Image 1 (cartoon, protein in one colour):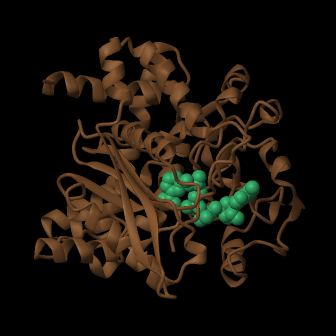
Image 2 (spheres, helix red, strand yellow; image 1 turned 180 degrees about the vertical axis):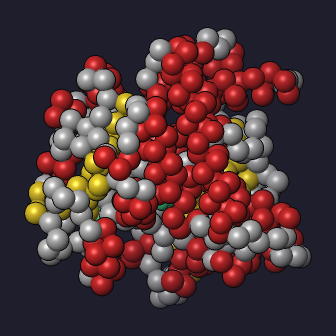
Length: 424
Ligand code: NAD
């Protein structure tokens, strides 16, 4: 199973609405016409399918599956498939739009999409999940395709599910087509470097921001919330680049050491301790709230959405926030953070290292040649650095925060491409 991303909590601010409100603000600043606004806001294609699946006890259950292609203006659409009981069309629609902006900001030739099936994979056997994924793939045969729409893992799915999609899709087409998904097992055409790609990109974004603020990484301090895929690689790589990581945290709480956490020891402890830092002794125990309020140079929220809100934004003392998670800062906190002069490297830029290496996976599948890890890392770092510079320049030019600038770069790119291509 891939990473389990927490579903949005209903009575809190909806991170997807937060995203749309920022899109609206950026669209106004870019000055696109009302017609273009409608083109960019309305999904290109929305598919809803019924999926009858034989359960292990012989009964048949019908699940509802979705795939929304928000945009294919820049190229084939890209986006994960999530399995979660809370999946519904509105959520998939908003997440698909998010993918459009994320791909555009890092300048990879993809549109945005998202898929989902309303189900609880934690209550299903591997066989039931496999039949569900295969049924979904068959229903999506005319949607998916390496030149049309390329799924990837999301909440509740991982390399195993991607392998089933490759298999079912390839059988239907009569040949192996592994470029139909990314996030596959390595033996099936997955890419080296994908696992650490998001945390690595977060590090490149943080170092680029430090450079702009004339901060020496060897004198800088950081706190990282979340010690899973994104957070632990970000902490490890920041540490490798000379940054003192004073605090890390996970669901069990925060761990603080004013001389710096021994990240190698923390990783070894987590790996030997069922994936959690609970009981880690190389640090003083603090709460996740206290971690967010530490007087460090770089704060990396890399756990979940909506952790910085209008209720705690005034306590943030970091000089910059580099968003490893999707939507960790709610829209209502933006103004407070901006008024404190804190630089925010937004999620659609900071955590785009993952989708960048997914793109490299697809490129390798298409050329039928496996790149070395060194080549992948060098190219991914360059993509992240160039994207950072583009967003930074826009933010300076229009005197807007980096978040708005990132949306402006993305909207401008998609809108101008549409103008060249033309409509009906
Ligand atoms: P993960 O499940 O591997 O790790 C999540 C970590 O956060 C775990 O250490 C968990 O214990 C911790 N956590 C959960 N709730 C917490 C809380 N309330 N306080 C502190 N820590 C808490 O997930 P991940 O893949 O690292 O993803 C983290 C975030 O990054 C998510 O928002 C995800 O959408 C986003 N993201 C992930 C990728 C990727 O490639 N994995 C790409 C882009 C964005």
